[in-house]
Image (tube, one colour):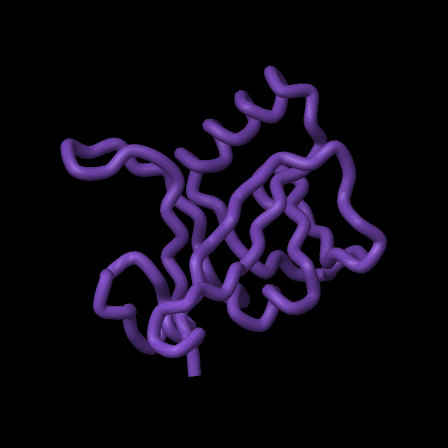
Length: 115
């Protein structure tokens, strides 16, 4: 299902990196999904990024900075308004999702907590 508005925005760094990866992998879309973890009694979530040959029928699909992005319906409410960046620092290297919907982090510091 095509969405009128992007659920997630991409920074220029993230979009440039993704367009290059998608071209070399011969894929068509970036999938962003949420996966529940066992942290905080199952309240923790982690983000999953993957390249897809094509979106699933139920996915929300939109274009962001020249990248086709697909998100499953269950993840959309958690990702609305988020921004995907690509960081390269001494401490981090890779894609990082900045999500305004997060209300906390689990004690291990690796998973986000919502509502």
